[in-house]
Image (cartoon, rainbow, N blue to C red; front, side):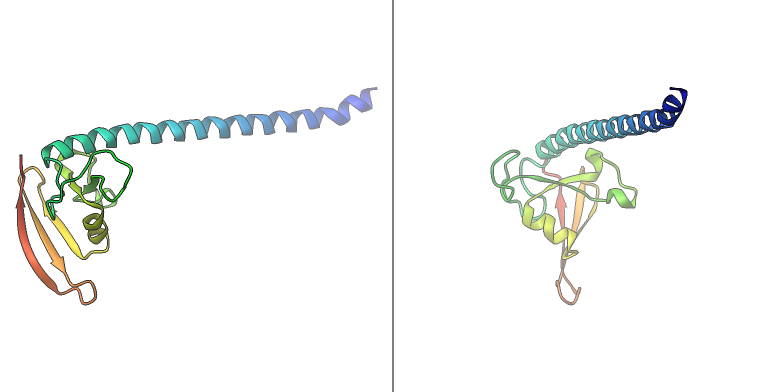
Length: 143
């Protein structure tokens, strides 16, 4: 009988380690889900604040936008003037409301947005093929 127990004892330790690994993975996944939910709540509040400040309009083309809706094309999108990857912050001083088309153009570098959203933004439009500057204009804060 002692040979039988000694054979399964290491298996029990491996099983316990595997279970604890699974439990750690579950806890890590739960923490990631929680962090994503908290980030979503922060961004929703930030989008609402920026939407109010920008009076529900795209800061580039002045198109009226909805805060919520079925179509992503009519919905206000939050854009960071200074990208988070470049050291920008999730703050009202670094975000603007854009329509889907202008948000796409900004990320394709057809337009660039610089300045302080609380004061005046400089919007530069470039040719999408050559990169030549076509237009530079200023967009004061509507609030």
